[in-house]
Image 1 (cartoon, helix red, strand yellow):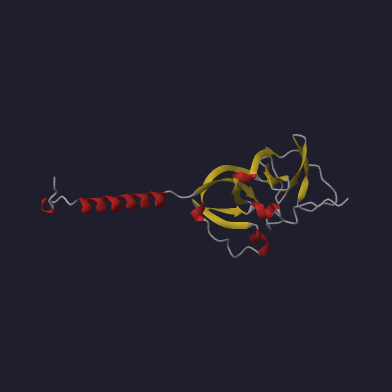
Image 2 (tube, helix red, strand yellow):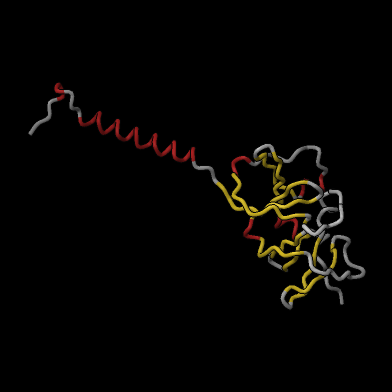
Length: 182
C-alpha cells in the first residue's frame, strides 16, 4: 500500500502538525499553572505578613505569658505548651512596626527552627492560603536595612500588600536567640 502525496495525505506534514499542537498545548498548560505554595498570613502593626506553612506547627490563643527578667526585649514572655516552656516573641520592634496592644483576636504561631521552637505573637491570624510565587516583587525601598533583612519580598494580591517574611533568617536573628550562660 502506497500513499500518494498528491491526494492531500502527507504523513510527514501531519506528524509535524501533531507535534506542533502537542508542544503548544504543553506550553499553554505550563503558562496557566502558576507555582503556588501554602502560606500562613497574619497581621503585625496593621500590615499583612506571611511565611511558608512548613515552618508553622500550630496556631494558639495567646496564653498567660510569664515575663522573664534580663532577656531580649523581643521576648514577650514564656508559656507552657503541653509541658514545654516556650518563648513568645514579639517581632514587631525588629521589623520597625508599631506595637498596639494584643487584643482577644491575637494569636501565637508556634514555629520550629533547627535549634528551637518558639511562638510568634501576632495581632491576628488571617489563615492559610496558597500564594503565587511568581508574583513576588522586591521589597519597597522605604524599608530600612533591618526591616529588609527579614523580608523576602512583597506580593500584591487583589489590591492588598502581603509582606513575605524570611522566617528562617528571622529565627536565627541574634535578637531572638537566647544564649544560655551559666
